[in-house]
Image (tube, rainbow, N blue to C red):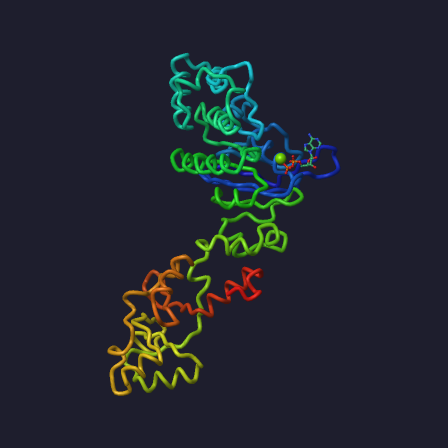
Length: 382
Ligand SMILES: Nc1ncnc2c1ncn2[C@@H]1O[C@H](COP(=O)(O)OP(=O)(O)O)[C@@H](O)[C@H]1O
Ligand SMILES: [Mg+2]
């Protein structure tokens, strides 16, 4: 775990580049620091491995103050990847990756075995690449070497400062994917700096939004999109981004909590009455009317009642039984739309993990959420 406590940094003794910053990064987390250029991301990062000394405040790794750790040992145990990879041009790829293992006095065989393993992990044929020089490699390949080098002695923590920002979009996306796989596989604690929102949303378990050296919000991508801490965060991430990532919107974010319903023992005539009162054509049918805890059993519409000439029939015989279309509250919007497109009525029950009714989604609730998050759609495209 990495913990920054009230960390402040100023270079000239006056202006605070980082100001009273608090951050707690759990073991195995992929945390992205994001913010505009000059907001203090790199400085924050460099203080973690003491490339910069905090002016005030403390930094702990696994509970131990970094100040009391041996500096060389600290740096060797934290992998560091930067935008300009910083490979030594006169050293082979193998020698570059083996820098820290060499400092740690690993044997030749140990080093080579590890480097081969890392090259394969980075999808670079080891037999070939081990002996080549950096300038014979493409930008993306060089960046892979940079990552391999950072992983060489298997550090628990990896700091990455805009590692992919100089790459073309396709290579960049490929490396992002590889980084995510790597994280799944190796479970490292990763602190990753970027100024690219899409990159942050894609990679992060948690995002720290930094402005003027302060953390404005530290949360999961979902929470940042749904509940931006203030206008800056909202502006920074863009409201319509949510619409671009509908898989982050869940049924419980969209559903209405007030909607028409009727007990399964209620008569069709009464259903029509409730529909009139509520100015709706659709009711959720529940197992027990008037109770606090209810389970949905179906949906009934005015058409179903009329078509069956159903005034004398039982609700159960008329309604659409909900077995096929009940939606769990954590279902994402893409799936919700998918299910809604398969049914021919306009209200769908949402349940919690105990199968109890917690809400309903209607086309109106969908429309509401869409206009709320996507001002650009208001012009009548729907
Ligand atoms: N060694 C330094 N000496 C003086 N000012 C610095 C130094 N390093 C960074 N700064 C200043 O600190 C601020 C934050 O820089 P930095 O952490 O690199 O921002 P970011 O990585 O978010 O772009 C900038 O205004 C920068 O000019
Ligand atoms: Mg920077």
